Image (cartoon, rainbow, N blue to C red; front, side, top):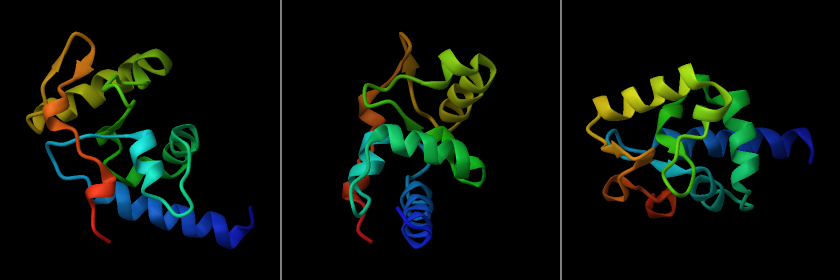
Amino acid sequence: MGRADSVALREQLVEIVSAIPAGKWASYSGVGSAMLPPQSGRIVGQMMKRYGADLPWWRVVTVDGRIALMKLDPVAGKEQVERLRSEGVKYENDRLDREFHYHPLDYDR
């Protein structure tokens, strides 16, 4: 992948993640499927780690509503849960409520 490709993907990541409404969450794989060309959830996770600090990063979680950060950085994982709860998202039994799920493909660019 060339530099222009990586810049284009980063721009898409910013656009897609920024469009996730407050009070909703999307999966890494959902974000990746909205990119052109489509990217895996793993790639999106790596991109979020690198470029996500200025994005609403707390709104991107695993496809089953789990907080991936809980294993990697429990402090950041708890912060993510608190940010989501402050937006009204329900979190029980280590998962986010599907009622609050948002699929980026619903986003019309």
